[in-house]
Every structure is written in structure tokens, then in C-alpha cells.
Image (cartoon, rainbow, N blue to C red; front, side, top):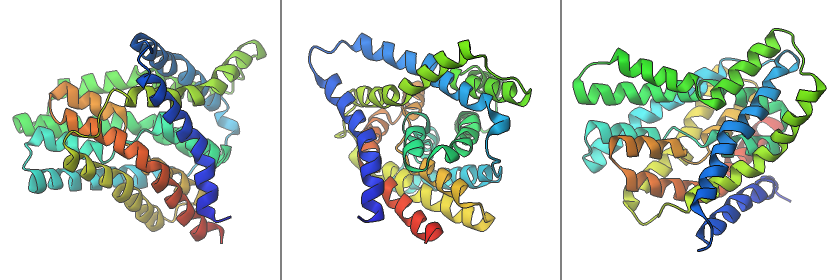
Length: 316
């Protein structure tokens, strides 16, 4: 069996759960209130509990080359700038729309799709690298797009806007779970069994539930709206960003596991947070919604392709 087939078959059940969630949400009798409730439970309880437990063993986790942050977020900056140029020259969009367009090319669905994919295809040894990216992802990318939009609107930066962004990120349950778990582990504490067992149980259901929630959410969007813009955003996200990450990782001579982890994250579909930003600024809602569906569908092929190429490079 080819390497691509192996990675494709490993990831197929995960995308199958996404498809099942999508089909369930399309069922006429499915209550939308249940989708909202499941989403809140995953974001506020299950995933933070899983990440806290994982990071509470920080001192026992394998060492991570922190330069992976340079490779990953360096690629975000490069692709964001390219995205703004494509939005300007290709579609004539204004500065605010350019910022959302660029964000769509760099903000992955790392938490609900990238993390489960990494566990299945790369194993537990990739999780410390994944967690390090997750810890900084929202803060850095929200700051980047907020600064870009403030500059497009006013030609200056807003300290108040930055402070609101930073506070929103810090108080996010996911980020709070990672940071508190890391501090807990660095302090040398160990979870008592009476706490560890429930957290382990929540961690076990976090992965399938998060994937189902992705599918439930995708059912609210259409791929017919602004397809040219959504196709361009999808190409930036699924092809250009992982390629740029790979090049930067190679230039930095990152270890194989860190390289594979961040390329996998970069190859994931557009994150739903981009749609929330588009809604907030009332621009590109249709294009971003379409790119969520399109990129999630195509990532079932492109992510295994990148993993296959990396395996040939590092494992042969």
C-alpha cells in the first residue's frame, strides 16, 4: 500500500465523522439548539480539559524546538501579505476585506481538525509541538488581522483594540486550558487520580465530538457564494501556506517531528473563527463561508499528500 493511501485511510474516519455531522445537521428534524449546545460543550469543557491534562505533564513531555513558531507564524505573515495582494489586484477589495481575505489563507481549523489528525497520523509525540502552536495561534493571528484592519480604517494602530483582542484571547477557554495546564506542570504538580480520571474521559470524547461539531457547523454554509474568491482563499490555505511552512522549516533545519506537525497544521482547512471575523466587520461573509466548506472537503486529499511528501523526505 502506498504512503498516500496509508495516510488517507488513517485520516478518512476523521473526515467521515465530519461528514456524519454535516448529514445529521441537514436532517430536517435536527434541532439547531443542539448544535449550539454541543459546540459550547466542546469549546468550553471537553477540549480545554483535554489540553489541560496533556499540558499538566509538561515536564514529562519531549522537548520541543521553539523555532517552529518562527516557521509557522513566519509563513502566516508571508501568506497573509500575499492574500492581501491577491484580494487587491485580483478582486479590487478594500483594506478591511483584504485583511479578512488574507486571514482566511492562514487561520487553520487547528483545534478541531488539526489536533485529531495529528494524533492519528503522527502520534502522541507530535502533540507538544501542536500545543505550542495552539497556545500562540489565536493571539498572534487575531493581533495581525486587528492591526491590519485598524490601519486600513484609520491609518494608525489602536491600543484599545489591541488590548481587547489580547484579553479576549487570554480568557478563551482553550488558551486558558493550555496555559494553566503548562503552569501546573512546570510547577511540578501531579493530578490526583480523582481529577485525572474524569479529565481523561473528557479527553477521549473531545476528538470525535469536535469533529462532529465541525460537520454540524458546515451545514450552515453554502459553496455557491462568491466561488472565485473562496477558491482563491482555499488555494492559499491548503497549498501555499503548508508549502511556505515547509520551506521555512527546512531553512531553520527543524527536526522531522516538528516539521511534520506544523506542515500538517498549515495544511488544515480554513478555521471557523475567520467567518466570525467576517461577520463582525460585515465583509466577505459569503466567500469565507464557502471557503470553510470547500477547504474542509479538499483537505481530505491535500493533507495526506503533504504528509506523504514529508514521510518520503524524512523517513526514507
